[in-house]
Each structure stands twice: as structure tokens, then as C-alpha cells.
Length: 179
Image 1 (cartoon, rainbow, N blue to C red):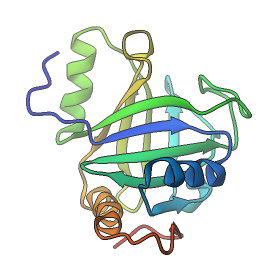
Image 2: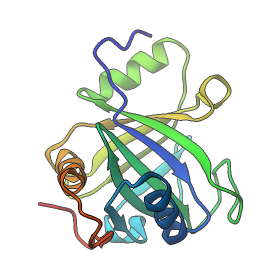
Image 3: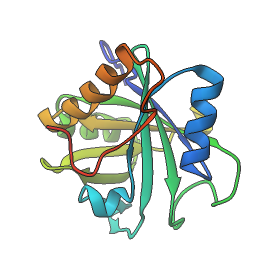
Image 4: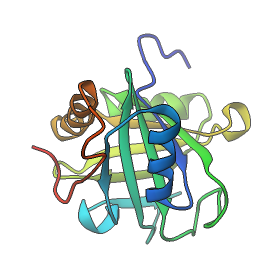
């Protein structure tokens, strides 16, 4: 499947403790600030289906920006379908890219024999996202996210916060979707 003009917009890791991982990333790399959504499923009305079955997964996430690439750190509070158990060391989870036409992207993956193993919706527009299992080839999943105004706004807030960050206010809690 050709991905002409597509760029990776995010890399994500599963971490055993979000607060410790954010601190480690800021110390080791200098990136920040991190924008945190605690209990994403409850806070941002996220729903996830694994191979068609609705899941009860919950996680907290921290987003920061490194140049043009968003970094996502994910702490799982439940562990029913992830390739990493709670308490294990940090592990790469996925790359992400925009899907300007979500349905077409799903169809393109299916046309080359790829299963959309996990799908979900999140946020005020119920933005769709999907994951393809590329672990054996790439060491992680491939995520594609519907390009909506609300999702683009989240990415803008994170990137804008990093642009002139002076090290102050390193962890910024998001309790509502950015507007």
C-alpha cells in the first residue's frame, strides 16, 4: 500500500507510570511541557473496539512535542488487550498518521490483506482512529487518526506549548478537550 504524502505525526510508548515517565523524558530530552489527560476513557468519552468487541480499557496519556513529532506516553489502568503488562518497562507502542478519509484508509489496508485490529472514537466530534498490527514488521502498531477540527486543535495546543517552553509549568492537566 503506497502512502504517498503521508507523514508520521506521533510516536507513542506504553509506560508503567505516566508521571515518572514524563519526568524522565523531560530530564533526558528536554522536551515539554506535557499535556495530560487522566482516565481518557472517562474524561474524553473514548470508546475502543478490539476486533469488533467493545472494550473496557482505560488509560491516562501525556502528550509533548519534539520538533514536528508528537510524543505520546500511555499508562494503562486496565490490561485486557495490550502487548505489555502493567509494571513492565516502557515499550514502544505505535506510530500515528492522519487519515483525511478514514473510510478510504480502512479500505486501503483491507485491500492489501491487513486487519484493522482495533478502532475507537474520542473527543467532542467522536474522532475515529484505528490500529493495524505491524508489530512483526515495525516493532509496533500503526495508528491512523481521522483529521477533525477537534483533533487538530489538540495537536496545535501541544505544539504551541512546546514552541517557546521555558521549563515552567511542565505538566499541564487537560480536563476538557481544547477549544
